[in-house]
Amino acid sequence: MAALRWFCFLFSALLVFTFSACSPDDIASHRETFGEAYVGPVTLSLHREISPKSPIDGTLKHGDRVDVLGYRRRYVKVAGPGRVEGWTDVKYLMSAEQVEALRKLAAEAKILPSQGMATSTDPLNIHTEANRASPGFLQLPAGAKMEVLEHKVAPRTQPAPEGFKITPRPKVRRRPRMSKNATKIPLPAPPGPPENWIALSEVPPLVARPKSPEPQPEPPPKKVSPKPVPMEDWSLVRTPDGRAGWVLSRMLNMAIPDEIAQYSEGHRITSYFPMGVVEDGGMQHREYLWTTISKNAAPYDFDSFRYFIWNRNHHRYETAYVERKLTGYYPVRVDMTQKYPAFSLILEDDDGKLYKNSYEYQIYRVRLVNRAPYNPAEEAKAEAAAQKQPAQFAAKTSWFSRMKQKMGRLFGR
Image (tube, rainbow, N blue to C red):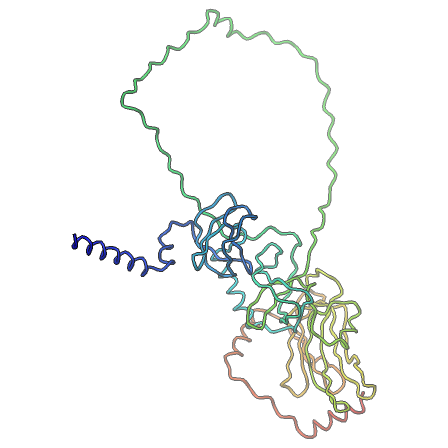
């Protein structure tokens, strides 16, 4: 009897040790699943039943990997980290391909030049694609800052991007089993032909029918011009922690000072850059370059640019150069390492070709110093080569040049 008790004790201890050594994830890994997916929204609530009104058993966050345990129509039962299980809509799940595309977008956005800082007065959802129906994987609070990188025009109404797809099990066709004692019933004999089958086979004589009036040709259908598809502007943004995504451009406000923004004339500011610093009465005032656009959903990025300077005599901002009725594209680049502040714009000429115009602000005026055809592929190769080379220090400005610049600022304005 004592030996039996010892055997039961050792067997119970072995079971406890076995189950305690196995983690919940190891136990869940042996369950049959329909595939793996990833959480798309910022947060995802898992319900106990299919109904959205059922109790919530857990919450997951964006990027969490889940196993799909079952499905009913468009609802799936998933299991996430920490043994959290529940039901949710399949549209809130992303496939592995979508996650990889989002990572690739963030990697490409790291090397894109910034077109200016922007803020939003309301909480802002960042989407994986330029599509309202795409997952909003990040929500920024009101007042958060982000960098604007690119611009895109997309239809206002789009179908949801293809996300995780359920792969159902193949159906197994089973033959019906027949009992061993079942007897086959003989089929009845087919009925014979009727006695007058020959008379029925004769073709009756043709009867002349009255001629029907000739059909009149139908008038050609009226050409109905398709309704224009409403479009909207999207901007690719980069957050301070390096994440990138798409937001509606109308939700952004470029973080340029109000004393400069008041000259926008109702146009939307698409980019801005601080160019230099001027001292006046012990205070420093920055000079700016900006680009604006006069209409929404345009296939280009800006149609005007302006260079602002600070007038020491009148103690206000003034326009040193402005050019309108352009067709310009990102990126706008600024170079402050040269003798004079320089910037370059990509503009489309009347012949439909792109040109890179380089400008310099020389003392009190902006001058066009170079104009060359623009090739995006060659430009990307040149940028990649420049990043591999060590950084060059800016050339020092001579004393005579500095005095000439100061005199020009003092008397030329």
